[in-house]
Image (tube, rainbow, N blue to C red; front, side):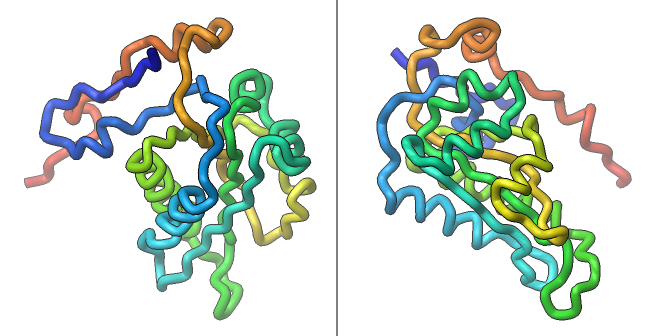
Amino acid sequence: MSHIKIANTEHDVLDLIKNRWSPRSFSDKVIPENDLHTILEAAGWAASANNEQPWQYYYASKGHDGFVQITESLAGGNKPWAQHADVLIVSVARKTFEANQSENGAAMHDLGMANAHLLLQASALNIYSHMMGGFDKAKISETLDLTENQFPVAIIALGYLDEAEKLEEPFKTRELSPRVRKPLNEFVFSKN
C-alpha cells in the first residue's frame, strides 16, 4: 500500500496543504493531458507584481527525448528516483519586466507563488510532486535554449504515488520518515 504522509499540524490547516508532500516513489500511471494542463493553468493564476506573471514552464513526459534531457541535468541524488516520474517540469523566472526591461526584483517570489499553486492543484488531483533545486542550471539552460533573461529555478517531478519499498536507500527511509516542520515560534514573530 502506498504510504501517504499527512502533516500533523497544530492549527486547522487546509487538508489540501496537509496532504501535499514530496514523495520519491512514482508509479507508471500516466497523467491525463487535461489534468496536466489544469495543473499548469493553476500556476498562471498566482499573484504577481504588476501582473507581470514572470513564470515560464517547460515540461516533458516520460518516454520523450525532452524528458531524458531534463533528467540528464539532475544532480546525482535526484536522478535515481526522478526518472520514474511521469512528467518533469522546469520552472523558469523571467528576470525583467516586459514593458521596460528593468529588473523585476519580485520575479523569484512570484515564480515561487506560481509553483505553490501548481503543487496544490496537483495535490487536489491526487497527483504528487517533488521540487528539486539540485540540477545543473547551465546544462538545463543550454538544453532549453534559455536567454540571459531567463533563470531556471526548480525542476518539478509529477506523478502518481507508488510504494516506498521499491526505492533504494537512502530514499526508502526518507519516504517512510515522518514529516516535520519548525514550530511557529521559530519563524513567526509578533511585533504587537
